Length: 128
Length: 114
Length: 238
Image 1 (spheres, rainbow over the protein chains, first blue to last red):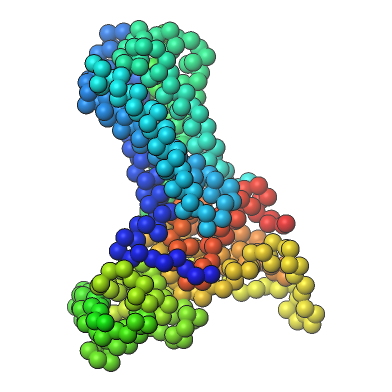
Image 2 (cartoon, one colour):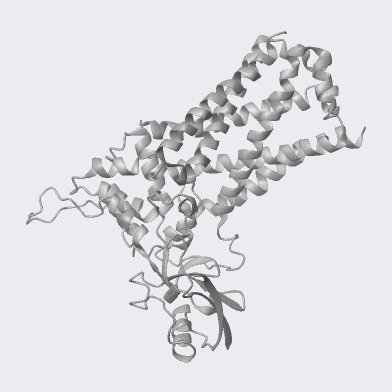
């Protein structure tokens, strides 16, 4: 078997698995941090309507709406990459892992991101 | 199944569970009604849903699964930095479990006045 | 064809420095040929390791533009850039210039007890391995390991945690554990199953598979261990 031809300086391209690993690690930490903020905000529900709406008021502006769409992107990256890892762990041979990465990235990521982010963007940012 | 195998397997199982839970969560918070679609996530907009015990059960299990997945992932990152040693790893695990329990109680208590 | 070669070299004060050399390179030149040319024409004190020069001994591992490669198996014209940057393999102690000590690699290699522990050391009869057995299937392509240490150098887990066994040692353990003649299965499985240093540390980065000069599917070996330790308690009986 011939080893893959390596584009040296742009070695991120053949090292797809490493790229995926970093995506997974960074998005994972971001999501754990988000969960902390999220639970903090949601906890205000126990304080009643005024407390919860007060806590949510911070987030009712276009900046956080856009950030929320960013959150969707982070979630999708982490979830699809996780699906990829589960498929590999289930026994798909390594020679397919690059194809798997790009297939999930392009088809899944794009489709879900547009289906989720576009309505969110149009309804909560543009039409306000 | 050894303890190590179990921890590794649970990370995959919880990850797989989080996908449908997340899609459902995303749907009910952003698409279920007109207000939510506009992004007006207010108390009145979500009151009917969150006072339903069935939804509370789903939300709480979502929180627990996400916490396990997230904190176990964090513990794995610590393990990757082998310099913490065997004792350091045990201390870290104890701390992470304590944080996880506090975090879970904090989240669950959100519903206690409904 | 003129080629600029940058080489990271050690110096007497313990710090490394980068030197550049311009050599007249023939089209078929490998990185190893370039190193010999530098040594002959520019600086006879340049240190690097090699032995067979045909990719079967695994001695000449270096970082070529950031990727672990065998110097003798990498042609200069495979490299897209004009400049070639050579540095010693990471995660190893540099002895001098490009020569590193593979000691950490073999420390891990020894942990999985790489030698065969046969049931009958004095057996006269040949063992019969059916072509359909798991051992036959996995050893095809996986037994070619040169112990060159490239996977060890490329592994992202080993970058931060040197206790990790590393891909080559785990692959060796798999071949031994699957071998029907072997008797040290449980010892090897205990090493491989360790939570902090064993197979569970692998993050399926595929760096080892990408750099392996023999094209060994190392991540598959690790994954095979994981799946079997999970559901069959590591018995690996097929």
